[in-house]
Amino acid sequence: MPKMKTNRGAAKRFKASASGKIMRNKAFSSHILTKKSTKRKRNFRKSTEVDPTNVKSLKVLMPYL
Image (cartoon, rainbow, N blue to C red; front, side):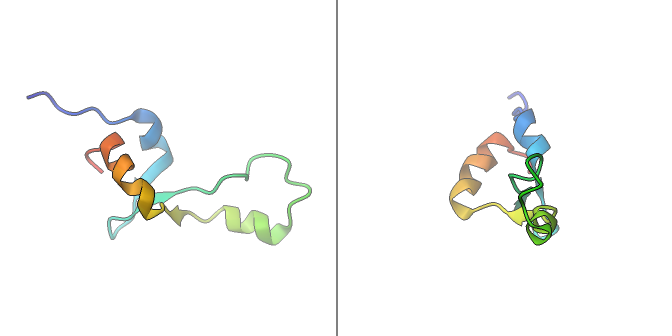
């Protein structure tokens, strides 16, 4: 049986934490930054855990994660 392919777009956007949770970067951080507060922009830098409702579909896209 051939190896399963990883979705390359998903592989660039998501990574696994040390405990095995799927992590993602936050949206809305790339442009139109003048109207956003410094605190809000600082919080965009942190990565967050993917919502549990989306984990199952991500496991299909990235079988070796």
